[in-house]
Image (cartoon, rainbow, N blue to C red):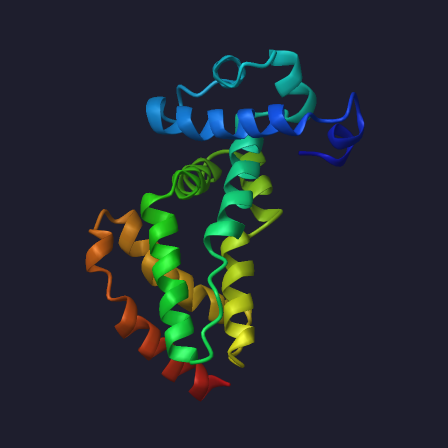
Amino acid sequence: MTELNARVGRPRSEQARDAVLHAADDLLLEVGYAALTMKGIAERAGVGRQTVYRWWSTKAEILFEASVADAEEELSVPRDPVPLADLTSYLGALVTFLAQSPAGAAYRTLLAAAQHDPAVKELIASRDVLTDSTRSVLARNGLPASDDAAARVIGPPFFWIMSGRPPADFPTATLARDLLHALTMDG
C-alpha cells in the first residue's frame, strides 16, 4: 500500500481489514491468482469494492499485506538456547510456512507473479519478510546475519517446496547442522 493511500479517506475498520485479508487468502486457494479479483475479494469479505480500493490498489497489495502479517507470526519461533535446536526449529517453521500456510501460498504466488509483473516485483522488494525473520534467528545465535547467510538458510527449503517435493521429507535437522557448521566457520 502506498503512503498516500494510507492517509486518504476514512480510517480503516480493523474488522473490515481483517475480513479482506482473510478473503484474499481463501479465494487464492479456491480460484488461484489469475481468477482472483478485487470484486471477488470485496464480496467474500462482505465489504464494498470502494472500501477495498480505498486501502489497496491491487490484489497483489492485499495478498502481500496478508502474507507479511501472517509470515511474521508463523516464522516467529520461540528461541531455544541451543543454536542447533533453534535453527532446526526455525527451518521447520519455514518449511511449514512455505508448504502448508495460506500465507505461504500467497507469498509463493506473488514471487511467481513478480517474474513478469514489475509492480509486483517492486512490492516484493519493499519488504523481504523471509530474509528479515531469518536474519533475526541467525543474529540471536551469534551467526552472521547477512543477506548471503539468510539466502543460504532460505534457499534449500524454498527450492524443495517449489520443486514439489514432500515437505515431510525435507532434511531439516541435517541442513540445520550443516548450516550451523558452515556459518560458524564463516563467522
